[in-house]
View 1 (cartoon, rainbow, N blue to C red):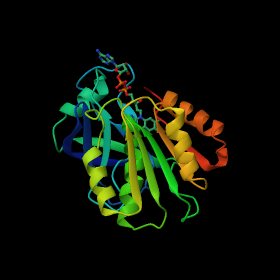
View 2 (cartoon, rainbow, N blue to C red):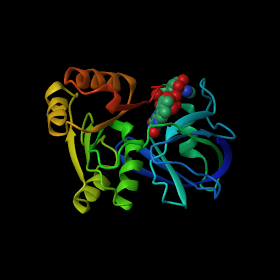
View 3 (cartoon, rainbow, N blue to C red):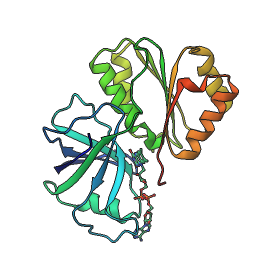
View 4 (cartoon, protein in one colour):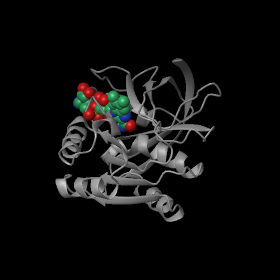
Length: 228
Ligand SMILES: Cc1cc2nc3c(=O)[nH]c(=O)nc-3n(C[C@H](O)[C@H](O)[C@H](O)COP(=O)(O)OP(=O)(O)OC[C@H]3O[C@@H](n4cnc5c(N)ncnc54)[C@H](O)[C@@H]3O)c2cc1C
């Protein structure tokens, strides 16, 4: 059931050259499943924004973290994002949700391949954090696509998680995704469930490369960050 919750801004953290993580206090009644998203509404905008005072963000934190709910975005001219950057710590926001089906719903032992384009890592990070905390049985491989190492968010944390867990491996590329990367992963994990997240263009491209690699479309889940 969707509900509106009041939360406070707890912390802002730089997670790459041009990207921020914002953490809100987690209301006791707010529940979500790793991979879901929320709508964040600001009670007032400090900077005008033609798209208004709310946006949708995937939750990056784990559902096991009862203290905070975290989101992440790249800094931009957006009046909404500049306001969220500048509102005082302790200030109030409204969280509506959680929503979405981009979650770990498949057979627990099937390998999982996450493909994240840049900031699209957020729902997958929530799932990776949760899966490593819960020591889930499914092996996870992350294909992490970024323009450059400097712009790749959460790279250090992901490297630490991969060192600690025999179930997680990371393949990062700092160029546009191409057929050999996807075909290699499709060959390595023929029974995998695929999760693709990021800007719509990137998700579409990987979906077509998977189709060319004969991956069954029922094994592919997607989350498109509409709005970019
Ligand atoms: C299911 C789902 C999950 C998502 N998860 C995430 C997520 O985890 N992280 C994330 O970053 N995004 C996520 N998105 C996308 C997010 O909802 C936003 O649409 C996206 O971040 C773009 O934000 P923005 O509109 O603030 O525009 P940006 O692309 O950041 O900036 C351009 C915007 O700035 C405005 N603008 C430009 N110049 C000015 C100016 N001078 N003054 C005022 N306004 C100006 C324009 O109107 C435009 O809206 C998700 C979307 C969906 C559907």
